[in-house]
Length: 200
Image (cartoon, rainbow, N blue to C red; front, side, top):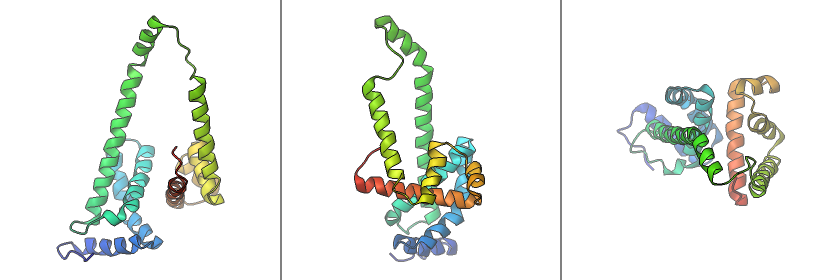
């Protein structure tokens, strides 16, 4: 791929970083993330109005962009491509959240309908419970394959539901390091799941 000379100087510098990143240069990934993390975060924060969701969506946006970095075409700026990925991912997230809210709003109505037909237990059926247990076990087995520092981060964030600030305090690390390492840990998890063919 050749650099598009119509791109601004900044976009051309980004493109050179993208080329390095696509060859596996970790520093290039870090540089790209450093350039756009705050801008992406604040854009997503405006969309979801929730700092924790905005943090997670920022990491997801970079994850998707870096996973598909070979699909980036230099006929427009990398930042344009990245912001489009982040926006689309966020819209999907909002749509799913709204669907969940709708189903919760109608839950009482549905329960009444079900009760009028037959008496149902509120507890999940044994098969459903078993599937949930198996998924949790699979997730823990996969996490156990990570290096100790990544394993600890995933456990604190997703099993114990610590905030980024709480993790930083617990591990005595700067919050930026926690976010960067969590991003890497999620990437490693994704790769393990992809190679084992497991689905969570």
